[in-house]
View 1 (cartoon, rainbow, N blue to C red):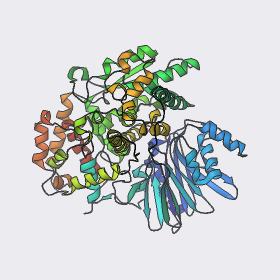
View 2: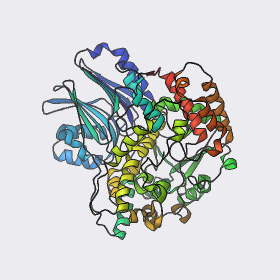
View 3: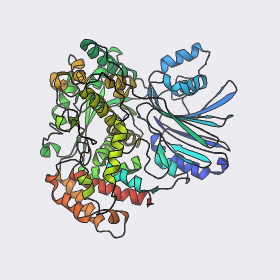
View 4: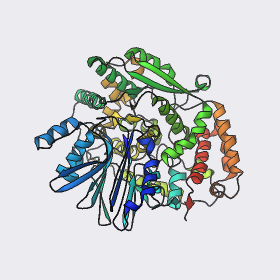
Length: 612
């Protein structure tokens, strides 16, 4: 994994923009601490920051290739998991390779097939390829949206980057937000619309989208859409294929030239990955796998069960480590450190985010990076296979709302009266835009039609928020985290699986449980879904509340003009009465306070200007 950025402008000499280009590169140094590379001409600048994982010697970037009268330059962030097959196909077409990096294979693939090369890729990636003679730039993002890519197009040029901060360092875009940006932050955050970069004019390339920039014009095209198809597999074949797809994805992602470890929560998804990897290691005589889990200081003392978090991870992790005989490390975080890391997590995301759910992951990854460069994690099985409570609660299944943020009341309550009057309407427009995209079959039952809509809501919003969290918080320390459940073959199979099969036995992710029940301990396989752990220590709320009181007492700041003092204090003083989370399953009163802290820091750190 790496960081990429670039700039095209035919009306200025980019060789004279060395300071800006240097700052762009430095801003994403954390994504690629091993090496840096630049290609700079009059019209184009391509920047690469490398985290060396595959082919350390021959995978340096920017990488160039001369082919049939054109010269191509690539900067690439990601991993291809079908490199071996692509290389073989290209060799049969007379291509010759210097090394064994996936970067080289991708570059040759584009030279051979042009923009159609994207249909051949299996992996997680964002990349840019510049054609020197035609002065054309090709941008691409992976189908599922694991790797980020932002851009800013202006009259005579375009700037792009893995992170927003790289674009801002060009000085072509400004840290300005308008009313739409405020709607995103206060009524949808920490999620954001698929195309939105929040700052005015900065946009995100969508998952499964390409863009071609030439002659000051930008043409975007979706090369991947999730389509409805009839599910013809029998129950037994569905179980077998589900297992095959998941195991195949995991095994493909075990390739690395540097040390690798595994996240283990004691839940179903991470346990499947760890079990499959441990069996692979045994067969290849690699020995034990190394697993990591995260916990918070005094959580065992303060943990309380609720509908969203029915049990704690520490009751299950030891069962799994015993089963796979892994070398396990538990990283225990101090609540003060989790709060202080809120600031770094904002900088990692360039936006207010998932608060302590972000900051704790950032600290967790920072510790892992001391010993490892690559890790595997179990994200996204819940979104694809109906793992969340809102899939199974008949009372909310057909509600017209984002199920992880059903009510806007708590969001409205922290704002001054009359501020952002149309927030609720904005949210509903985004909801309906998304549900309309759900491709359906006329033969679908009422429930299956709704489940396709729920799938798209989760895929385009909740899942993207979690993937963004995982990318930024891991890459902030230069740790590559792979997510095997995000294989597009799994996505497509899950989308078209009838609900009665997906929820096999009436359980969340029932089909996965059934597919792996013979290799997992029973208590692990049939454990009730429990989300990523958060702190339950009341000291965290006290620390956040103290800071928020300081923020509320400041005069003439952006937040002081937006927030309702009484509304915020009401949440602070009635913590136990918050019935609906701000977002997801975990963002309640302490996290709302943390979100205000992040907002305040973000407005000040980025010198945000509001244009309304």
